[in-house]
Image (tube, rainbow, N blue to C red; front, top):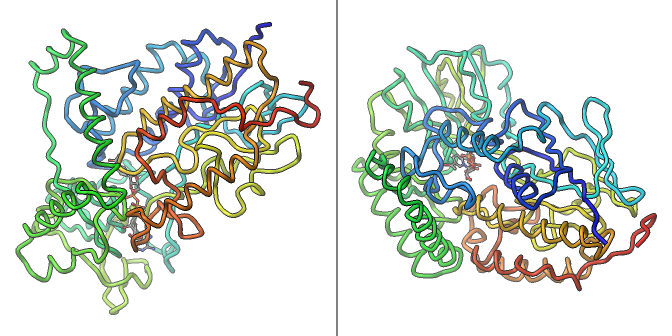
Length: 486
Ligand code: N01
């Protein structure tokens, strides 16, 4: 028996596009991608701040099925990456399957199918649901007293207001994660006054960036094997580095040393002390920048380490009572990395809701599925290997996994399947046991940590994650649910 599955994918960012292309390549025609924004590209559509670049080399931050020989830089900028994802959607003919400005509000599995409701009140049905809503897409606006009284321009960095000209303006940036560092590096010297409010210093790895010259690009176009080789080489290097830096390997020592040497380039003792973290490198996501320390030393740039007390109409007041007058306030304060699918309301056939399932924090089965939510798969789900690694190969591995289940359904091997609670608990217990030894649990605050203080990222090598998902582990799945005929 063969059946034609219907699939709804939520989100047309990097992972949603990946899933859609894979469905199309498998000959599945009945699929729809519901995207709440007005364009594809997810994070690369939302983030347009000055200095935006991917901190993973472009040769490795791309799909294996759509290698681009024309990347302009080793680390390309946000606009170029966004354009790449838009082009992939066009080249693989999935645009017709994408419904933009269509926000999913709730999804229920009843009568053996997913019933997915969108903001316009419509309900669509499908045999499978894939959540590809991304990890970092709910901006966190800090709870700073008086923030709404500021008379200048305020925005979160993921909602950069390009209508507000920065020419001649005094700009404040709150936050020193990858985003804050990139913005400060880009704006130093471009605006008369730039104030960086740093709550916690970051370790910064000075990885250089370079332009891919026309000859290199021509060679890549002429010999596509070169791009494949480059991808594999960077993948190997990243896998070895990430695997060793998560635990206490030589890689962690090497990268820590490079960060320390970078910090030493700051000759001013007081400034260097202010920029010196009191936790291990890589405990927070490592920031990559060859020229951040040069930027903070430029005339017109000021690093403020006093705690922010409140904001008033003219600027930011720190705990020592100083008013830092500014015209623009950019909130580089990060994202709610634990939201995942929420606020979408999901209900499985047993009546269990996603809110109940994740009351103690998001947990999944092998990063990709949830007990009691049959025929549902997650891309970039809880505990995915997102720490300083390319998310693109991870999305591909997870999409391939989902596809193997969809293919098995097509062959009539089952009707509805979800991982068992026991298997999910066993898997999560294994993750929990591995967490205390990871660098993320070595004593710092970061978006990697969950409510329970334990990291919500993959504690092993990315290679092990890929290997784990090569097998469907069918024995760990339940296939009988209320209202579903086997
Ligand atoms: O956010 P973050 P991000 N008062 O959460 C500070 C990816 N990314 O947008 O450290 C004062 O890292 C907070 O301080 P503290 C990448 O995965 C990738 O920078 O909590 N400060 C911190 O300094 C990255 O890891 C690229 O003490 C406050 C900052 O805000 C992830 O996105 C580029 C505050 C938040 O840092 C998130 O990076 C950019 C408050 N009330 C981002 N609240 C690439 O290149 C928060 N902070 C791919």
